[in-house]
Amino acid sequence: MSGRKSINSVIGSSFGRAFGLLAIVFCLGAAPASAQDDAFPYPVMPDSLREPQARADYALMHYWDNANFADSTLLYAANYGEQGFVNFIDLLNHFGKNVGEASARQFINKAWATAVARRRFAVLIDYYLEDNDSPVHNDRTYAWLLNAAADNPNTGATDRERYRFKAKQATINQPGDTARDFSFIGDDGRMHRLSDYRDQRVCLFFYDPDCEQCHTTWAWLQANPLPADIKVLRIRVNDALFELYALKATPTMYLLDKGNVVVLKEATKEQLATGFTR
Image (cartoon, rainbow, N blue to C red; front, side, top):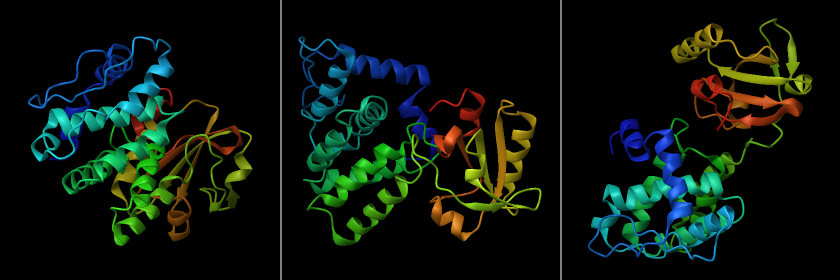
């Protein structure tokens, strides 16, 4: 694969992704694709399931029932292995509140049973879920898959340790959590604590003064001010903050609600500009 353009070509536009998810949840019912067909073989949805969440739960738990995990040609076909995986994690991101962790574990157990599938999906998991810039990046889903891979008996000791470390990092400051408290020196030269701002909404801007992209992003924030009730805190990073927040790079931005509750973790400029949705 060749960078972010490849991700966008597989995922498609926001409208296209939303339509695809609805089609998977509401419209499954055709016979599975044949073994010769390189289109992903989605499961057949029982007509008795009418409620959207129930259909989503069924789709997630039976998503991989007809998949061939031993055919390397299919697994490396964009319309089969890659597109099927992207749609699966997008379903997990949007509808996985009931059975997400169980369906992630079920998928890993199927995929990790064959070496070719294990190699293929290990790459796709990191490619689509580790990178903050991926449109389907989701730390909750990433942690589910990593923990399942770490627990699988076909995972080697070195990979098991790596998966557990990454899963632990991914669970830090997830949306809905109270952000970890810390002290920092503000632009006024005084010492502050994040908890000092728990009574208001806050945008955290973690930066390094030697980071060119940090200056570019900060200039964008100045030119595109956030709503007046959001306090922007510019925070110079250090080793302790990198570890505490599991920061991958600078700049990194968070949006916190009152009570320091995480709304957006590792937010993009586009998310901040379009109503703080993820």
